[in-house]
Length: 93
Image (cartoon, rainbow, N blue to C red; front, top):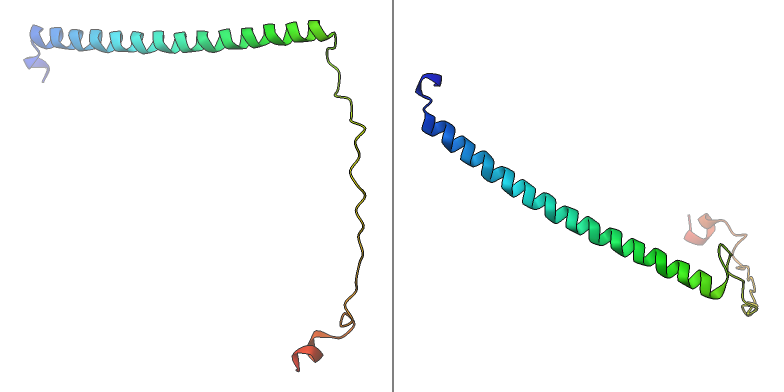
């Protein structure tokens, strides 16, 4: 196989590698652009949170519980009259 390797084969491989490299660089640039956009979104969110905290003057505080209470539930337990009877008697065995 190595005896049949020609300069045209080397040129073809060089061209193929150059094409693959270009495609990889293009994908890399697109991924970097996407990551930069996501980073910008996080920075904008951070600025909005900081502005909100500065405007309302509260940072790192837990939410204050509301005064609203749930209505009390009335639960009544009823015991079945057959609860003392073994299952065998009810089934007839």
